Every structure is written in structure tokens, then in C-alpha cells.
Image 1 (cartoon, rainbow, N blue to C red):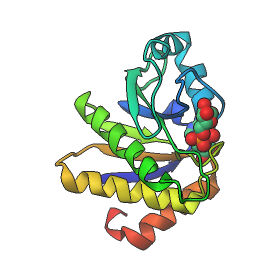
Image 2: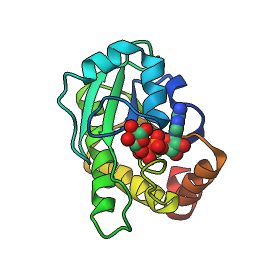
Image 3: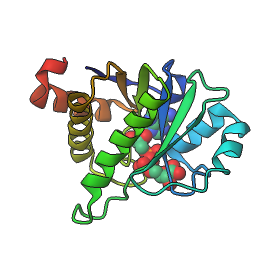
Image 4: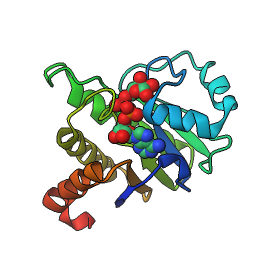
Length: 173
Ligand code: APR
């Protein structure tokens, strides 16, 4: 099980699949969604527009086009509304469903952004807790040797993810 926290721009990651924090239309947006569509080029939107959208917690896979990554896995995180509306379970499913699609596509490496922690206002510490728990659960239940990168766009996010690993999953360090 290899989970690494890195700081940077996910569109530059040289991995088999990068995960996009999309919205249910899959037709692009701001944040990391906008960055991925800009870097991948118009063919990505073309493929996405034929997918018929994606429910929160679900994931869809497309080609990566002009990205270094072979695939983009689009997942729709929950909008934070206080934590009593099943947000943690939906965020957990984003990670599990993205890992499953990457595995099915034969990916050996995957990069995740901090899903839902931007426009969708999911508190960073809570999102990191859910993300790590879901990924460790995935590795326990599969014999996957996928390399996972958690790509944080800023040092604050990176520190929060690193702290979560240090405190709860020291064996991952
Ligand atoms: N590389 C890595 N991470 C990035 C990048 C990038 N190029 N750009 C932004 N991020 C980070 C943000 O700093 C944040 O930590 O991705 C995380 C998720 O933030 P958002 O992109 O706002 O995604 P989210 O909170 O899931 O909201 C999704 O925003 O862009 C729209 O269409 C999208 O409606 C959807 C909503």
C-alpha cells in the first residue's frame, strides 16, 4: 500500500489516472475541474457530455487526452451541509468508486485532489480523515498495489493530510 501526499498541480501529475472533483453535470466548472478541462483540452468535455452526468458519490472514467495521465476519473463529492446529511459516506464512496474504476482500467498509479474541500466546503480535517480511512479500507479488501498520490494545491491542505497519516496511519510513512 503506497499513499503519498504531495503538493502541486494535479494536471501535471505523471500517473495513469488523475481524479477530477467534478459536479453532477460533468460539464466542467471552476477549481480542479476547470484546471483539468483546460489541460486536457476540448475533447475531454466532448467525451464527458456523452456520459449523461454522474450522481454524488459515483465516478466515471474518460481518456486523459492532452494530459500526461492516460485517464481522468470524474467523481462528484458531497456539498458540506453540516455533516448530518450522509456527507462522510458519500465522500468515502468517491474514493472507493474511483479506486475501483482505476483498477478495472489497469492503472498502476492514481492521483486524487482533496475532493469537496474547495467550493463544496467540506472541512479539510474531516475530509482527510474520510479519505485516508476509505483508501486504507480499499487496500485491506483488495490485493491492489496501486500507487496513490494525494495532491494538495496548497501547503495547508498538505499539512492536514500528512498529520492525518502521521497520527493514524504511521505505517504509511
Ligand atoms: N491541482 C490540485 N488540486 C487543486 C487544483 C489543481 N490544479 N485546483 C484546485 N485544487 C484543489 C482545491 O484547492 C481544493 O483543495 O482541489 C480541492 C477541491 O476543490 P474544488 O476544485 O473547488 O472542488 P470541490 O470542493 O469538490 O467542488 C466541486 O467545484 O469546480 C467546481 O465543477 C466543480 O461544481 C464542482 C465543485
